[in-house]
Structure formats: structure tokens, C-alpha cells
Amino acid sequence: MIDLSGKVAIVTGASRGIGRSVAAMLASRGARVVAAARGDHAASTVAEIQAAGKQAEIASLDVTDAGSIDAMIAAVLERHGRIDILVNNAGITRDQLMLRMKRDDWDQVIATNLTSAFVCSQAVLKPMLKQRGGRIVSISSVVGQTGNAGQANYAASKAGLIGFSKALARELASRSITVNVVAPGLIETDMTKALTEKVQVDWAAQVPLGRLGTTADVAAAVCFLASDEASYITGQVLAVNGGMYM
Image (cartoon, helix red, strand yellow):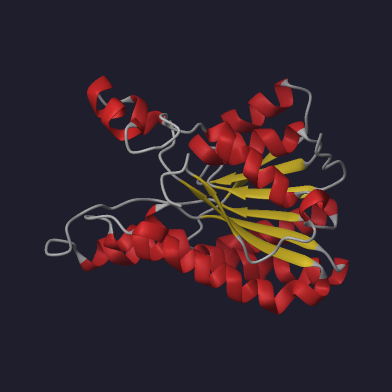
């Protein structure tokens, strides 16, 4: 089993869905998890992890505010003295056909999904460089690889994460810091569970494996890339999509 004992991991957007599952699985492997989200939204994530006897703490974070990010990183370093893993997971959608998409819909999605990954990654570089090691994993999407009608903003942000991560991986490889991407496909979340059975069946028909993925499927990929077992993997996109995009 992957062992992350002694590692300090920050997960953004940890209040629900993929972020919550990633935080829980990293903690289950021994990491001390900082579950970051707006306000106290990640409180239930932390409570769940602690109830399982693992280590987690809450961090209030607005990923669109650079000052909020810097303050969170400084607090983590003051408490623990190191940051080993950063998972850039925070994300939103503001779907609309291009003809009707408002500039604010574009700006908010890019700021939350892409610019936040730049600011968070930059903020952890000094401690990781000092440690001569670290793992940065960003959550992209199959839409960032294929595009999708009505999601020009979201697809651009998720494709941008891929290019960003590949460039950063080249910059940091000599310091034993790896930078990778996990690109989920259709994943069972609160949003998809609210869809009608017919819609879910239609969606699953697009996937060669014949089912939607789970948040645990994505979390397992993140845990692998964050582990010592993945020390020779950097600048890569690990697609967790049931074969939807090959």
C-alpha cells in the first residue's frame, strides 16, 4: 500500500466531491492533510478524516485571492515546517454557449480553475525547493483534452492546467519536484446523482467501460502520483475516464 506517513498535503476545493475524496484517501495513506475551502466548508471533510483516526485540519481559503493563498501557506509552514504535496483541485463551471457567454463567466472560471493553480503552485515552491522534493498534482478534465460545446471557459481552464503543468515539470525536475495532472472523465458526484436515470445511462454509454467513474477512482490516481512510487513520473496526464478519451 502507498505510504505517505510524515507528508504534509494541501488539497484545495476539499469540501466535497473529488476534493473530499482525495483528502480522505491521502489521509488514509498516512499524510497530514490540510483541507482547504471557502469559510468552514471543509469542516465535515476534516471531521470524517479525524473520525477514522487520521490527521487533518481545516484551512479557510479563497483560491481567487492571492493574499488568502499566501496566508494559508504561511500558516501551514509555521505549524508543520514543510509542504510535501499540493493538489490543485478547486474548480467551478459557468456553462454557456459562446454566443451568450458573459465575460464574467469566462473570468471567474479561469481565475478559479487555472490562475489559482499558478498562485498555489508558486506559493509552495520555496519550501519544496528547500526540501529538494515535492509533488504537485492538478485536477484537469477530459473536457480539457476533447473540448465540449457550452464549456469554452471550462475547457480552456482545464487544457491550460495541462500546459502549465508540463512547463512547470520541466522547470522543477532537477530538484526532484514532480508535476502531474489527473484528467477525470464522467465521475459520480452530487451533480450527476441528481440527473435522471435515463441521462445517467446515456452518459455511461459514452464510456467504453460502461459506467461513470467514482471520486475514489480519481483519488487513487492522485495518491499514486503523490507517492514515492511515482518518483520517475513528471509532466504527465493520467486520464481517469474509463476509456472515454484515448
